Length: 383
Image (cartoon, rainbow, N blue to C red; front, side, top):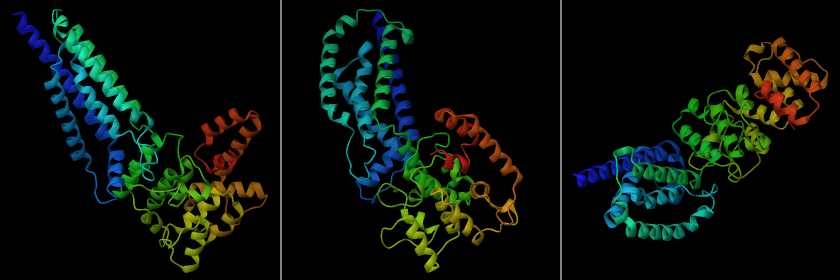
């Protein structure tokens, strides 16, 4: 009777560990690392293959689970040590996502990955000790899912899950970029604009991708400065270096503005060339005007705004353009013909009161971001 109870407890422990492993692995691959794995596969195959989120997740999860079954068949580890049979599978899972952020330019694994042979040797040593002392552990009593053995295994599984999370690539900005690229490829611009929206972290490539999604949604002049900015106008379009796509076709970023450039050129030179050749697209005017705003060139912005928008009705002007015109009038002490926006002007005066009230720069910037962090004014004055 005692033997049957022990066998039953062993089955419970194995089932609980298996469920925990399958749920964690599937969720980790499907919801968190799917875009990274897809991008790595794309890079390593030279763009010849594509990654299916669901199919890829299922295949990897099944293969890793079969590896665990093989380890268990070799070691027969039960009771307190059963969770150890999942270590090789979780180590491999971590290695699959342990790539450097610049993997698309120069593929390499994270530094810790080179210590994986040491971890495997340590694993073999621990398994040897567990198998050696396993007969002594069997003499202890076990009481189902709430037994000491169950909690020992759950704690071990939890620690290994943390290990995977820590040593897999967890760069938020990289994940935002790859997820937005997938949404752009699927023409899901609304979802693309929600990714990482509350985060203050960004890089030039992420800023470029968001600008492209905004342009496709006809919201570039309305919402560009609601997101963290970096790099000025040079970050508006790909340069195949610091501003680049991994999965998404960079040509599509240019197509919303105009023709694809035949050679590398700065954003300002590209926009000038497109205008001269008359190959502009619907979003060209917004890209040009936003490039002036990003470079804080209010004079060029004010002088060319009328080419793309009717000024006699502020309701048709995007939010950031209204903010820029109010700032232009205050900075130059002039009135912009045909423009008047009482709401924007009142907000501007309130913001200036904050500037006068807070002399401490960190405190001032925090208060300014809290009240006006999604305006062009915040971008203009923060540096």
